[in-house]
Image 1 (cartoon, rainbow, N blue to C red):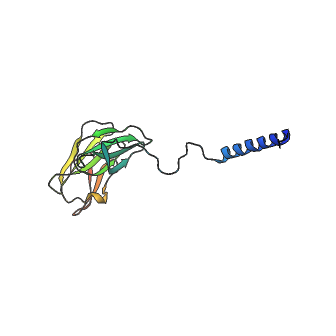
Image 2 (image 1 turned 30 degrees about the vertical axis):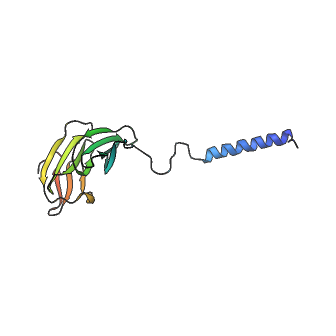
Image 3 (image 1 turned 90 degrees about the vertical axis):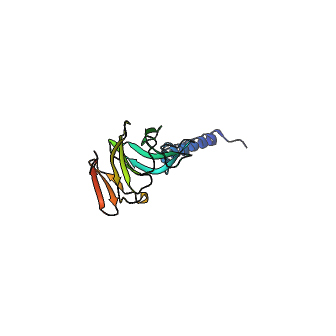
Length: 170
């Protein structure tokens, strides 16, 4: 039985009203529930698990898929994008932190339990060794490395929490 013109118009209006209600009550299409991908490792690299953030960027460590101890320090915009390598071939990076100017990391010195602290500007450049031969530092699993923009802080098995100026030295 064909619908009358009135019934067809009513059904069309009802359908339009439902679509308008669904559009008004549904979240915008750009809204994503849960975590969003900021950057992804290339097939030749792996993330090493160290990550630090600034107001607008993320600094992280990665290594080539075939060498798990020759780590690189990379940076990407916090909204996502293509990462840039700040420092490559840095050895066994155990800790990482950043402020709005520099990235800082702690490397285990080969064959010892000592650590070296290094830095590089977030815009890239020359890697600077801030201190080396630091003994008694806690293991990497403690995530015990931070900055307030003036000092670097890290825990020590024998000295509690230690600090040093971000420019290096004692």
